[in-house]
Length: 493
Image: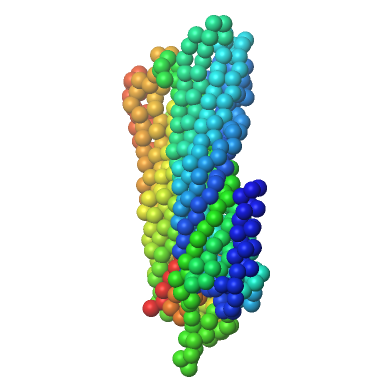
């Protein structure tokens, strides 16, 4: 609260300064800047006992679920980074798009402990940690000019972060406390989420401005399994699902790079505060987009014709998320307020995710994005500077979804057969979405867009050697789908 009062006093004193006398638009245009402040992080974990835990020792499995599920302490740390964006001022309102990338410090820790009686004479203690080394956001901003040099704004959009999680369960004898065994695991993944916040920004003159803002971010989870390090109990494992809640309070200093202008037919300049229906979207354009992807990858155990007992109908899903980026080229035709176009892009869907089967914890699905491209039609309506559009077409992507399905001889213990592994490779499907584009001048425009994609289902299959005699054939249907949220900049040629 002291930080909030200091920010308020600083903004109030700056607004009262004579240096801010004078009119003009201090907001429109591109800007870059830096931010620094404090961050609060809290990791929350859910533990699910898998493998033979629920069947063989149900009370112990239930106890593990209780002690391994909960939210850790709220860790404090530092956050600082860089930001870039674009604004358009119009009629006392300011509309903009902003993106930032920041490094952070701090680790949230949770610990639970319980006796495993009557199934066991041991006590289990689970320790789980969550940290976020970096976080990025992509957000629209809507502001109101309180005075010529002061704006208050609301903002919200997509967040992307690296989420690190680790878990360790130590088993000790309830009587005497002697060490018995331990299981552990960890994961590090780029995850997506949502963010919302508000702030105030004051123009300092000469293109400089100072802001204070608060952002709350909720990140999606990362899942992984813990295994016994001794290797004595290969069929007992715990699945950990970890997510994070983040609050950031920070100050920022921005520098505006220039005031975009339109040129009318007579050659005179009109700034963005002037409505101009004569702006034409027709023609060839190209650009880039950056954003995040999040979705699901599902594996379904399938009979491939060599014995239905091999396919037991097992189905499990991995949540996937990560950054995305494209380079695009397109062409528009405009007739009145209607705009029709075609667009092609190529880029990278960088999401990742993994999950283990609830029936056989040794069976794992791992999905990671790769190169992808789309070819789409677009149709939209424009009032001149703003274009609202819908889009849809074909998507082709290399998803690299892999199923690892080992042959396990349960009476003997660990895996004794060859492991079946297969990659889904290239998949083709459909995509549809929509967005808004804003013309900054006769050549440049910025956009915010949402697209859903479905890459269909692909069968992967192959033999696995059975030591008891002869090959066994395994098959999995892989289904990848998800969403992409992105912002970009385009130039008309």
